[in-house]
Structure formats: C-alpha cells, structure tokens
Length: 437
Image (cartoon, rainbow, N blue to C red; front, side, top):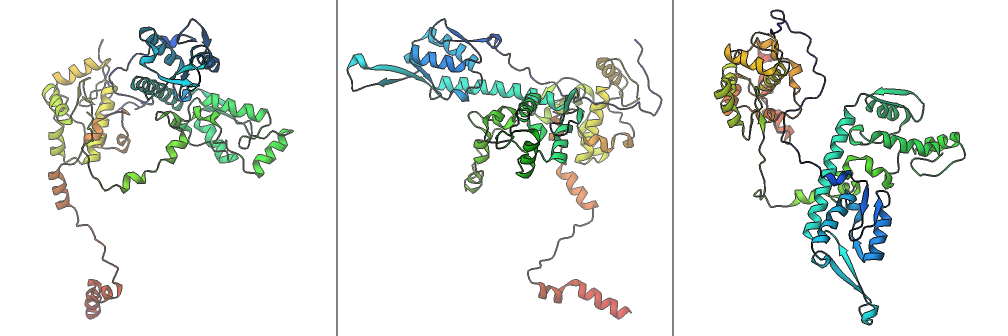
C-alpha cells in the first residue's frame, strides 16, 4: 500500500482526543474464584449468597465456633472464604487460629473452644492486603472510565435540567446553582449508583444531611435551603463506597486518613534516608517499545539503534527544560500519527514509518523550530510518559544561561529602614540628577 502524503510544509488537523498511555508490564490475572456467585462455609457444604454475609458469619460461630475479626476491612469476603476453606482442608484450624476458651473455670464439659481468625496471623494479613490492592486497582480503573465517559446522561435532582456528556457538568451545576457540593467529581466512583442513592432519599422526602423525613416536597426543599442542609451526611457510612479515599489504605476510612497528623513526620530531627528506595523509571523509547530503567540506557538505545542523539540535539539547539518537553511531546505525537516529522509523509503503520525514517535518515532531521516549539506541546502526548520526568538542564547549560541573562535583582534588607534611606545608592543617583539639572 502506497504511503499517503500531506501537502508540502503543511499539517493536517491535529486531533488526538483520546488519552494515550505507553505500554506497561502486564498486570496479574484475577482468580477464577471471583466468578462464583455464592460464598462457601469454611468447613462444611453449606453456602450463602453474597448478600447473606451476616448469615454466613452467624453459621460459622454457631456451628463451627469460628470468629473472623474485622470483617468490614476485608475487601473481597467471598475470595477470602474460598482461600481459607482451601487452607483449612489442608491443615488443622489450630495451625492458624488463636483459641479462645469460654467458661475456663467451669468443669470440662461446660467449656467450649472458639477460634479467632484475624490479621495477627501473617498469612491472613497478607491475604487481606492483597485483596485490598486488587479492589483498589479495580476501583481506580472504574474511576478512570467514569472520568472520561462521555455517554453520561442525567437530570439534576433539584431543577430537572438534563445534562449529557461528562459527569462533572452535572456536579458543577449542582454546586454553582443549588449550593450542593459533594466534593470533586474526580474523587467519586460508581457515580450513577451514588446519584441513585441520593435521588431515592429525596423521593422519600428525606433530607440528605440530617436524614429527617418531611410531609411533602416543598417542606423538604425549604428545610434544606433554610438549614443549609444541601450536602450529604459524612457520618453515614453508606456513602463511603462512593469516594476513592476510602479505598486507598488497608483498614483506613476517610476519617482515619484525615485525622493523621503529618506534623509528627516534620518534627522529627532524624534525617535518615537510608530506607529510600529509588524505583526504576521504565521510560519508553520514542520510536519502538523498548523500555529502560535509567535515562542513560534509554538515550544510548535511541542513539545506537535509531541514530537519534537527544543529548546532542539539546546541546546544538541550546534547549532548556521546557523546550525539551515540547520536542519530546511533538515527536511522540508525530510517531503516534504515523507521520514522518522530517518530510511530513504519512504512513499506514508505525513499522513502515520507522523503516522509512531510518532508511532516509529522517530520525535526526527535525523540522523548523516554529513547528514544535509551541504551547500545545507542553501537554504530554502520553499521560504516563516517564521520559518527561527525567529531562533536566545540565550544569553547563545553567552556567551559560546565567552568563547570557541579566543578573537577578536581590531585594535590600528592610529591617533597618532609616539606615537604608541614608546609605541607599538611590540617594547618590538623586544627587547626581540634581547637580546635572
């Protein structure tokens, strides 16, 4: 198939609208046990529906003397049950659980042993943390989908105005026009379910904040307006599932996170950074899928394999940090659109484009500076482009820059204002001006 070519010196309309992401390492596959719709008893053949969790817990206590601690902190109770059912079939329960003996001072026939399964056991804690991390990943993926969803369509709860497109339009409208603020839209997940819950309360003539019920809609509306109750009750745990903050840390709600005082981290005099771990950047090549753990390795790869020397270009063109950012984003966009930035020819696929650029030595043939040194390329072409985080001005560059630029003005010390007035260089300038006149 012949390569399509754009007119000389011109660009077709640039219209990348979708968020782009560079390739990352594949994530772990979710266990197949998740697809099962019932929760098993950990010891017998009894099973319960997912909405019968309390019945299962009661059964475990009454029939098997097992108590599971902090059930509300278990991110996926069904997966948790399947895991421990398997483990209890392999080893006796006493290998895992603490034993609680009731009526210890009574006769033996009146004593009973109960077993406590909790995260004091390292295996249990690891399982709980793993389930929490898997749930967090799912929640973040759901949040990301909702943030960019343009098919959202809903009526305002207060004035019945219809909104289509991004969900933020509705939330911003309710905040601006009705003083109803539920926080930043980006912090909300399961948005439709959240709005359904709020709408149900209003339809039941219930105040969203104090949760009192009123006789008719007008009375409810006046109450919420006069009492400034146009907000949700933050103490109602029913809303926790709709806010990202409640998923971030194992065993912590939004109240726990907000109550943490960071000042104790600031007040410490210890400056031991020995536990700091530098994570690899995994930056991706501009022209292929090659990833490197350091900038140096990536730059060497592009120089040796693609004849593209970014450091030399930076030096030859005198590029400062933000100019490098714009150049990288420009190249990323051209490659994504299968366009040769050296000759503006467009190709049907990326491999054909790269082959053309390598054969014609167009990889190092940058177009006029005016084409890529533009404000639009301040914004990343790929949201997770780690290469942008590693660009920097070198020391030599900073020195040359300081030599070519004006010396910065340093403010005078104003703590001794009267003395400053007498000794300021401005006095001498004023006297010289007076003598000349």
